[in-house]
Image (cartoon, rainbow, N blue to C red; front, side):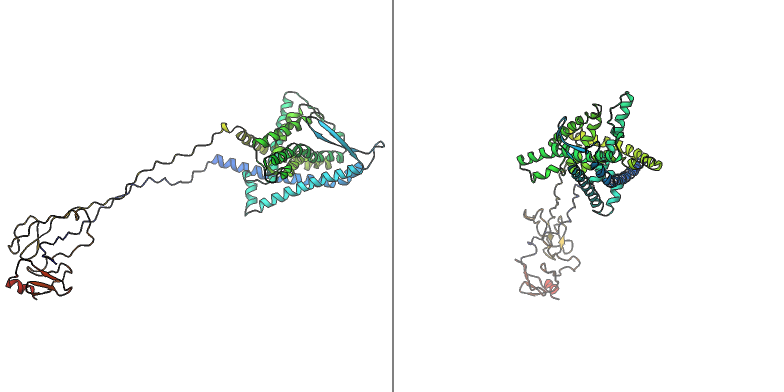
Amino acid sequence: MGDPSTQEIPSKPATPPQSVPDIPPQPSPQWPQPSNPLSDLMNMFKSMLWSAGFVSYLLVIISSFIIVMAMTPDIQNWITTPVGGEYPDVAIFVITPWPILLFRLSGSGFQAWHLLMLGILGASVSYALYDLLKSWLSKRQAALASLTVPEKAKSSFETVGKLFMAALFFSTVYFLFLELINVEMNVPPFDELAPPVRVYEMFTASVFEELISRVLLIGVPLVLIGFALKWKDPAKKILGGGLGITPVTMVFITISSVIFAFAHAGGWDYWKVPQVLIPAFALGYAFVKYGLHASIMLHFSINLYLASMEVWPESVILQMALSTALLIWLVAGGYFFFRYCFDFLKILAPGLFPAPQPSAAPPVRYVPPPTYHYYSPPPVRYCLGCGRQVQPDYNVCPHCGKRIEPIQKVPPSVQNVPAARPLTQPNPRNPPGSFVCPNCGHTSASYDSGRLTCLKCGTVHMREGQELKKEEKEMVEF
């Protein structure tokens, strides 16, 4: 070790100031919005209306299907009973804007045809019920959510119920419009038919007309397009289902609906066309989205929701119950009708409903890295006699009167750089002339020929160019 007067001992730098990072403003907490009493009341009314409407619809349609099944012996008896020497027959046809007759069936062929139509209807009802139960049992409280929130009711049976109520609402408004303008629509003589015959005509129309209108005019073209465009399993498109409302499906829905509506003008008149056109769109939508069973169920609902009146026409209780259900269906149907019109309008004219623009992200603020400011330590000065540290501006030691070492400039390598560890400095509490080892801070040393040896770490210190005086030697050795 050299002379302490020439050793550069930087002091420990001050604690660097803590820089505060520029934290971007945090969004304010989203507190729950206060409830709107009017909105809550409307939601409760809509929930009660949908629950009562769908439950009553479900009971009426299931009972109508049971009535059709119960009338099977009467219908078979009518088919096998000749009238005027001739057996009843059925015409098998396809439709363009006008029906095209293919052939007629009578006798055993007619019987087989009736059973075939009944089997397809039974399969459609069974699959719709299966889809409903699967949706209700898919997760906990799914049935409660479907019965209270119509937007969550997405099974084929529930969707058919919504479409039926919407179609019933439109037909009722259309008939009121015809009465307002004093127009009487021509109606085929259904009242002259026996109840089994009338029920047969209505339920077979719901099956056969879906085969020639939806399967033939929507399913078959989709299959051909699927093979041309190499869709996955294009043959499955013949029965519909699993498809969305796209420009392609919308074209075929429109074509089939127009042809289906004009095909009714022969037995009725042209005032029937607008009344059939809108429900035909609902039938096409059900076929495309859920399949043939859904369009059959919707057609069956429209034709035979009053089937129980064929069996008990004089029942006052039944009339009151059906009248109440009809009122509920009409009110709920108004909501569903305008809701479906709004949804179709968004699909056909998306430009009228621009998507909401996402809110712009807040500007990214530059956050500079934290900086630490260091200061250059003042020069350290020691007395050449007693070795104690003195003020930098002193020239004579105030303790022993000896000369002070010259000012040592801090080299540039030390400026503005924090010290790795502070070095040991002389302790000002020790008496004048005491020894302090600058390496370990120990205060005991042995002296021999101008050499000071620390008794703790063994470091040897020597004052170059000077000899210790006798009194200094006595002070150093303890």
